[in-house]
Image 1 (cartoon, rainbow, N blue to C red):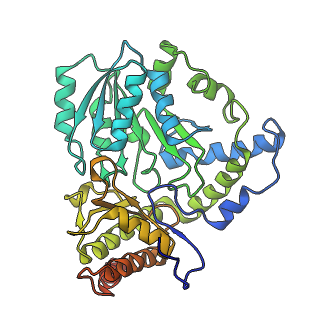
Image 2 (cartoon, rainbow, N blue to C red):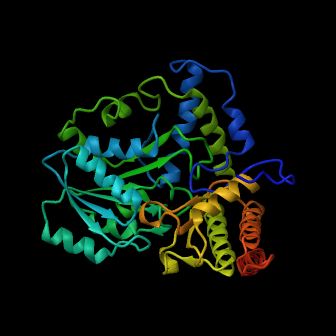
Length: 389
């Protein structure tokens, strides 16, 4: 392992999650603990409960659960489906496969709709699968597949099943806030999110929005769930059913202040600008986009295939060891060939230009054909073009 550059005084996190936590949000978690059944907690949770639904674009309550994003995925399956159910599962990446694994663990009959990693689901394939299997009771889909950088058209899926008894469950863990998502308008029944993405917080909280259709289904067919129970979440709302991570709730309160202050339109535009500029810089360095069609690229993470002779595992290690920069590589069969650079949450123009500079420095020092300034110049040019539109 090579030593850290003497020019550095801090580290930089450029992953699709966890993400950088702004100081104000991080320090809010250092406040003295309060009791989870106190008037202070009631006021805190009422503030949080009031401000979460607009982020999901829903009139329904949004529940806070002490778990990870995967815990929220399992909670949705545990409450809504059992061995008598038959669900469609959109599978075009690592987290679509996770939905498959959870459904399998609960004995749910599943019909995967598979597409290549780096592509998005074909809505016609979903329509055809439903026509061939009218007994379908649910659809599980990841909105932003961070393993590949692909974005699935959950609006089309939601509208396809609107007016039916089919429950549409959306993993919006990385996409919520960063991408437009209209839960009520699009007919989405369960939308899941987590604290360590665009909420700019440490991991540990999940957010679950449940439509009336989904709530009724969960009550008609009670499942052997206690900690994951939607009924308990609803019964105690806005308070948590059991002892919560009070420190994370303090951080969430401040994070919501930040999000409200900037506003969803500006956050989403910044994410789109950063995604376009990051890709421009990486293309100039010889990388190739995994997601070919621009319309289906998400704005959470830029996923690119490495140039010939570059192992992204080695690149990832050198970036962290020498330059204090943490990016992510590929998963499963893309390990060693894919680089993923996150720009979600609090990431801004100067954060990403420093990441680009570090990548460029490593490539230039490893006897590649990269010249210093190539990627940074392309990134800056793309930023300037976005500014002048």
